[in-house]
Length: 187
Image (cartoon, rainbow, N blue to C red; front, side, top):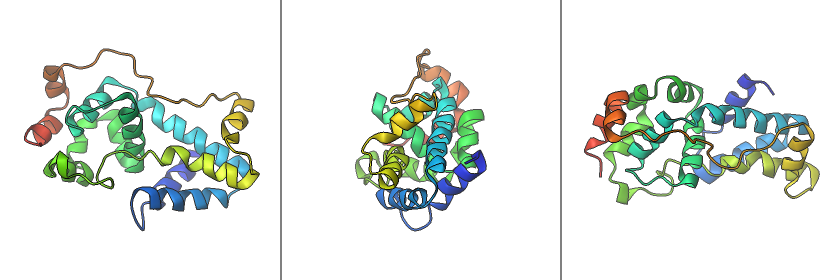
């Protein structure tokens, strides 16, 4: 599966409902593919996630999540950004402040944090398990995806790997002025 195929699957899974329903549709599609394609999907997911391990993405997550960012929260925020599609992912990597125009972020900024439902919350943890679940359906092996990828020389990441300095609020405001303004009044 090439990069275009990966993004086609991610983006087409958005039609028909959020979160868990979306993940199940994606898992079903993956389980209908040859096993090597399932492995390639996971490789492409890991490749899409890697450039999100930056101070800018962490600052973005801190704005959107009103400062409530754990290691797991950042990890699942990454896959939520991927779930927004290729164009949003490109912006998150290269021009995160431009995401101030994205409808999903504008909606979250307008919605009080204490009113977020599970479907509103900016994470898509289930995306992390789609290839694993499809692999299990195809092979009957529980947790076999990691071993199959290791045989190809790929170690699956299991946490956000960002280790750089965290931006101060002043640096965040300077580097992400539109997002800072968008989320400044969010509660």
